[in-house]
Length: 254
Image 1 (tube, rainbow, N blue to C red):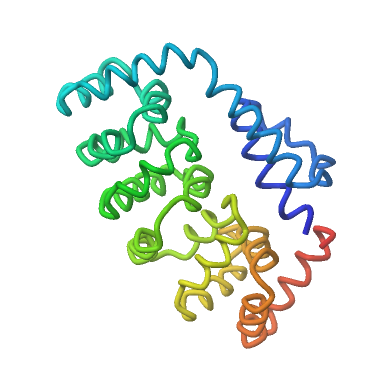
Image 2 (image 1 turned 180 degrees about the vertical axis):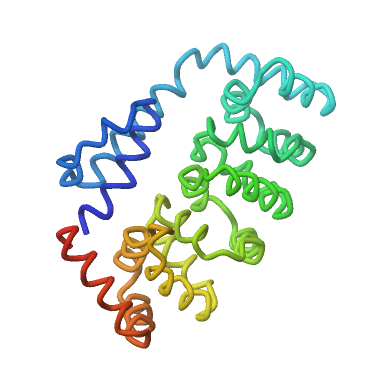
């Protein structure tokens, strides 16, 4: 289980530091996931504090601008990176109101640069409709890691709207793989209808999807009761499903 938890944390750290795939040393999978997460959050905190006074001044100006002027500044002057930093320092209501009128494509760009811990009050004020639109853009781009970081901060109604809007279980499994809180993961998985969970388990038979480790990670990190439910679903399937799962567990030292 250590490997299953460490791998996504390593991927997030490598991406934050803009390192290449060569930085994914297999030996690092033995490092406890909680330690990797602490390092990543410390780096994120350090980056957020860089030139904080300058960004705070921009945020004060942004709070005073008419919405149309703020949108123009974000698109033409700030760009995604500065917009993300400024949003984290603005009043949540003002930032959320502006986000409602921005194009989902631009907000998807901003989300790549935004630390959700500094935007939690903003996220709960953005409509489910707009969140779903952003998710659809991120799915098209394959940005599962980005979406996984934000799930902890979304309201249940928004998560249900996303589940309804994303029919392919592959996308949901890949998002869940990168979720920050395993307690939240358990809650989100429990929202999924049993038939969707069954289809997710059957996806291990489609090697082109390469979903075995993300699916096993999901099973390992939910509560014991939900593990039993998922285990029973797996046991109901064809013997080939169980063989695939057992083989993957052996190959990955699980």
